[in-house]
Image (cartoon, rainbow, N blue to C red; front, side):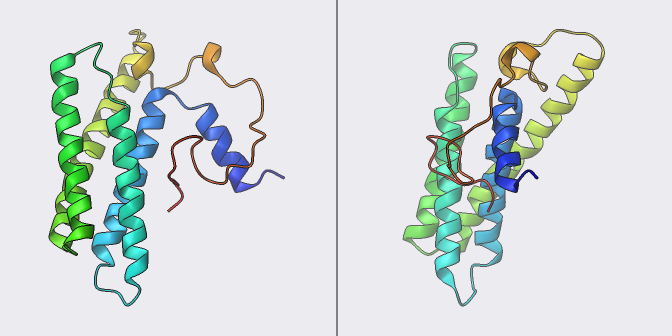
Length: 166
């Protein structure tokens, strides 16, 4: 029987760049939303942990911006992620739910935009229009993982330092 961890790792290994980005965005939104919704709870440590996870996701998004195709667009996207990251830091430092909500709003807009892009790419794929490798919604067979992931890395992406489960 396949464990949830094995399924999770297999989904990462076989995901397209589009899907990987979506996973990180979804994790950032999930954690930022938890922090905002649970701000006034008795266990504030959980809120701070969620903020830290959301920041790690946003840092991963910032590191993933590629400037080679469209430097101006990449620069604007970097600035947007940097603003979001700063809001999540300020939420922690100033204990401000307003800053956390600002960061969450930016992430939700990006999540919605990314979802719309995925729908357009899927429609183009269905119509037989070729997609650039970095935007493929489905990973081509030549990029599929050939073996099982054998390291015990829990639910964290290798080398990323953040968990996408919570």
